[in-house]
Length: 196
Image (cartoon, rainbow, N blue to C red; front, side):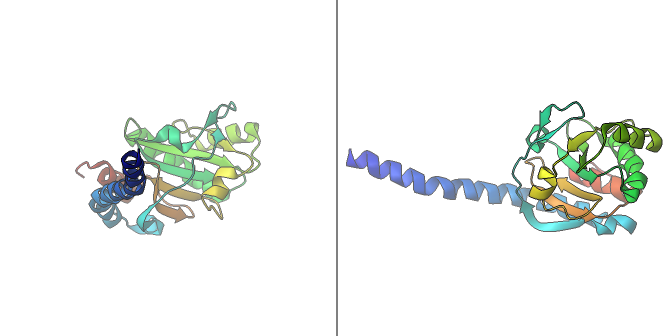
């Protein structure tokens, strides 16, 4: 019995070390990809700051437009551009069609642009916002109590995060940018491992 206890204790001590080593190995596996993506940044895209190491976030719930629960865990397996916006945000109005174009070109099994209206955003106002901007490829998700924004440290709008396929934040931008630019597209191609 004491052997089993000792063996179990050894497993408990070594398991986190083993798992931690695996996480470090996985993080280092994407380092060249992130460096290649960062090297593509020009113009307004230079505001996108890549982190030294991925940042984990809790998978806090938000809803789709109809109130069905979601979280960023639903997007694991994909590279995600997560954009926080609001109907009253003027720069968001200019940026949203550019994010829409990025989703139209790259959206699929390995990449997705996810838009999250944070704070008080009237549903009818959200529809008007997307209609006026000509947005047809992006979701209208809601974070009415700003729980996701707060958990991810969003301080102003627009804020855009790049999440890796494990749901970890690898880069962040405060303010708007030209997400339909050649630089943004080259950055996404680098993340996806495609040749420019």
